[in-house]
Every structure is written in structure tokens, then in C-alpha cells.
Image 1 (tube, rainbow, N blue to C red):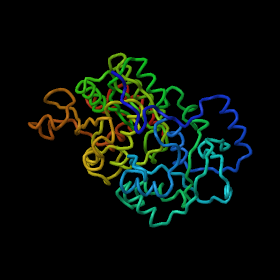
Image 2 (cartoon, one colour; image 1 turned 120 degrees about the horizontal axis):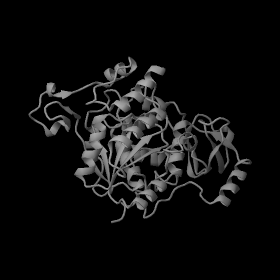
Image 3 (cartoon, one colour; image 1 turned 180 degrees about the vertical axis):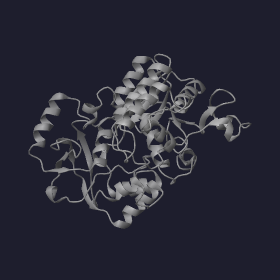
Image 4 (tube, helix red, strand yellow; image 1 turned 90 degrees about the horizontal axis):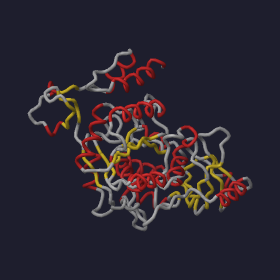
Amino acid sequence: MSLVRPHGSEKLQPRFVYDSERHHELMHEAESLPSIVISSAAAANAVMLGAGYFNPLHGYMNLADAMSVAETLRTVDGLFWPVPVLNMVEDTSAIEGASRIALRDPNVEGNPVLAIMDVSAIETVTDEQISTMAEHVFGTLDEKHPGVATFKSTGRKLISGSIEVLNFSYFQSDFPDTFRTAVEIRNEFIERGWSKVVAFQTRNPMHRAHEELCKMALEDVDADGVLIHMLLGKLKPGDIPATVRDAAIRKMVELYFPANTVMVTGYGFDMLYAGPREAVLHAVFRQNCGCSHLIVGRDHAGVGDYYGAFDAQTVFDQKVPEGALEIAIYRADHTAYSKKLNKVVMMRDVPDHTKEDFILLSGTKVRELLGDGIAPPPEFSRPEVAQILMDYYQSL
């Protein structure tokens, strides 16, 4: 058995420059090029392109592709893709007329060069086009939506063209044990002899229900292992920082999973909170990692009440054409601890249960308990995981 193929090509085509001589030449060339500090969202796109996650894209989309992807989930040339991959800035006067430019990192002190770009076009995006894209991608124009607010604030000048990536921003230095490229993840699957792998997406610590969900998927699809793949980039205020989440997840895996069934890794991207569209993006780049399945649960990649509980599952039926992706979706229901059965179950599997038969806690309630130094019940959260989270909340 071999791993699932990357999206859109036979082999991964990461945009990172691995050849050391070429890398050195480009770093030298960058010093003499016109340069621009890009947005955090564009920097995250560069990291994802560099790491092979956004295979087969070679760089940032132009306006025609961006609009086409937003409206139809395909580029002008017909490549299936769920969200525009953009480099939008407010002011391009520093690079006017340049065909080759250096892109500088907004998230690292001194704004080092992140990538070199061949500029194919600089286009002005109208407010109407911004709104059209936001409406399609996020399903709303409400500026209280964190993804919409970020998208509308990054400027109206769209710079398109292919890039060569020279570093992985702060992700490699801040998360050396966790950040991995799609290339590295594929290689490790091969080393471990895994061909069927279930991906679990998270931007939060994992409680009992998440743990059991991974175990259910592992068993149901008869997989070789689970890739717990956490987002390491920018979040909205109030979300738990990546370092704390990383520690909590590793503790859970170490104590509660059989050996060699889980890989804990992370990727360098800023959360879009785009619900269904982001779920499809998650599927694309998990396929590029070599995963055969992606767990999509309740309110996947959602925020607030903008999306229905299972919109991120139905989008695969409604918007993803047959054969567009090779990765399969493992559809999860609400999971909770059943007092009747003394285990975590998917609610759809126990039609005889009433609400009283489950241990249900809201995220707000859990945060309150942890903040007060009270561990949630062990049926909800493993005590060792709760301790890490209590320590964090009490340090605030």
C-alpha cells in the first residue's frame, strides 16, 4: 500500500528552496531587491506554500483566480481549490515597476526576508470584489466575524506570482518539536510503514471526547495511525496559545494512546474561522501530507453561530465534485461521555439516551472551572491534561 497522492500533481512540489547553494544565492540577491512587509495572512500562505501543504500552487493567486476560487472552488484553469491564496497589501509604492521582489515577514523582529517573488501582476481589488470573496468564503460579511475582519483589513492591492520560500517564519524556531512540513510528514509516514492515516485538526487542547473520537476513527477505518495536526499560527483573542495546547496534547498521547499510533505535529497557518470552506482546505492539505482520512466533526473550523453544526460535512456533498479529492472524510457526530455506558460515544449511536444520560459541559463552563483551579470531571478531561490547563488559566 502506498500513501494517497498529493493534490493536483504526482509528487509534492514544495516552494521552499532546499538546495543550500541556491538558498545562499537568493538570500544574497534579496538584499538588492525592492522589498515589502506582507500581512500575517500572506506570510502564513508563504509558509504553507513552502512546506508543500498548498501543493500544487506555486505562489499567490491573481484576481481572476481568486474570484473564480471564491465563487466556484476552481481556478480559471480548473484546479479544484477552496479558498483564495492571496498576498494583499495597502501600499505597493515601494515595489512599483519591479518584476522581482523580496517579501518580508511581519511576525519576526527585524522583518527578515521570508520569500522572493516573481511579480506577475499588481491589481487593485474593489470593495465589491472584496465583499464577493468574503461572502463566498466566510458565508457572511459581518465584521464581528474574526476571519472577515482580517480579510477586509489587509489592503486592496493584490500582488500575484510565484514564490521561492527561504524560511518558515517563527514556526520552526518557536515550535521545533512540533512544526513539520508536508514533505517531512509524508516521509515519516513512509518510515513508520503507515499507508492509511487519519488526520485530526485542532486549534484547542483535546478533551476526552476528542481523544475517543481519534480512537474511534482509528478503529473504524482500520488505520495505521492518527496525525494530530495542530494549527500553530495566529488565533483570535481568548484562544489557548499553541505552547500550552501542545503540552496538553502530548501529555494525553503519551499516557492514553497505544505506542506508535499517533504523530503529534503542527502547521504554520493563521486560523481563518471559515467553517465549511476551511474544512475543505483542511482536507486538501491533509491529502498533501499523505493522510487517507480527515475527521470532520461538529462546527469544524467554525466560530460563534455563523455556521450550522454540520455544514462542514455537508459542504463535501454539495461543493466538492466527485473525484476532486482523494482523501476521505470521517464524519463525526457530537461526542460525549455516557453515564449509562460509562464511555464516550457519538450521540447518533445511542438513540435511547436523553440529555441527562450524558456529561455535557460548555467551553465557557470548562474555562471557568479551570480558571478557578477546579478540574473538570475525569469523564470530560484527563486529570493530567486538566492540570496543564489549570496552571495556564491561573497564570493569567
